Amino acid sequence: MLAALDQLAIQRAKTGDLEALEQLYRAYEGLVYTLARRLCRTEEDAEDVLQETFLEVCRSIGRFRGAEQASLTAWIKRVAASKALMRLRSDRYREADSLEDGPELTNPREPDVALQMDLETALARLPERSRIVVWLHDVEGYTHEDIAELMGMTVSFSKSQLARAHARLRRWLRR
Image (cartoon, rainbow, N blue to C red; front, side, top):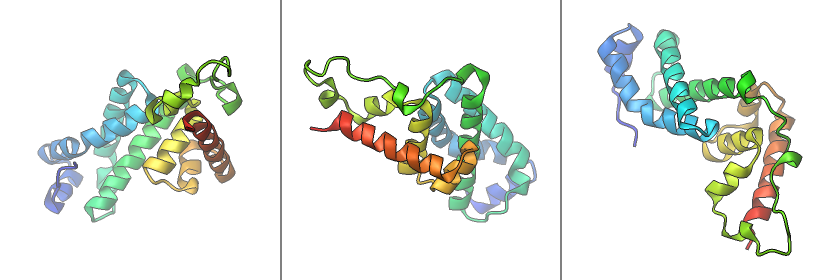
């Protein structure tokens, strides 16, 4: 659960108060790490995204115009998602990850392993871009417009990735 951060602490953080910035970090580190971990898959990358996110938050908090806790949460989550996507776009992560290239069950006559697969495992099997779209849309509540902007793609890309990923997940998780 997100720790309450009062408006005074937010105002102090905007002026560069180190104690207030630490309070901000403590209040949101779990939320940011969880989001980064979901998008990046590895603990090391999630830790890097956590660090990059709060460096950006510290640099930019003075320009933050929202007044409510909820809008601060949304802003910090948006910074974290952006940092995670930037990390995934780096050369280290470039790969062709169309839905057609994802892993499939090898022998349809064998017992259907997908029936035993939980959602977590199914999500992990999705290609990176598809998994990110599913997570941002279905879990974090981002709109297709938000996802398109974050990923530097079109709205139709987001919608098609989501539809294809949902079809694949249904197939894997059918009973």
